[in-house]
Amino acid sequence: MPIKDRDAEHRSDEDAQTRLLFKAVSLFDRSQVAPLQGVEPTPLDAPRQPLTGDSHAHLLAPMQAFTESLGFTVTFEQIPGQTGGWCDQKARRIVVDQDQPTNARLRILIHETIHALGVGYAEYGRERAEVIVDSVVFRCCQEQAAEHAWR
Image (cartoon, rainbow, N blue to C red; front, top):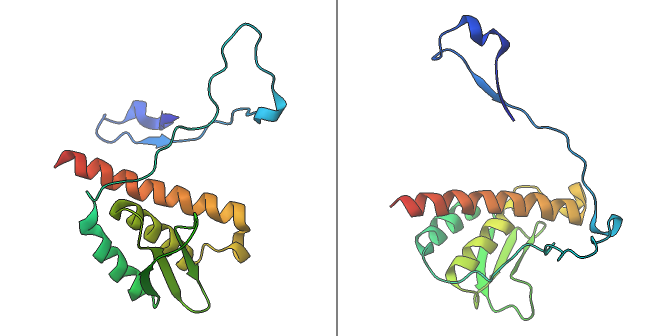
């Protein structure tokens, strides 16, 4: 919710600063509500698709170099199953599934690097750590996508 300073009336438009505040709202979990009769319910799950392509391949090497500058080794290996990668804090090692498309490997490397920076299960619990990490990854990828669109 953008608001202007109260003293803005006494200043010129150039000097007036807008602040961003957050408004509290009530939220309900899907288990707390029932669908309305006669109304088609809106899907509650966010649409998602697997990451494909290699439009951000040029960012993979710099991201790997950054992660290695933190003292972690980064390897790309075949990982069976749904796990796209993992971060071993004690061994200071990150593994990314080499069979993923390039853009997905970049997302996984960013994800695991955020864990390497200290957003771990011991500090935050698994669920909270994953929400924090995925929020940062989303923001990083969102910025890159916006920048890529302007080129």
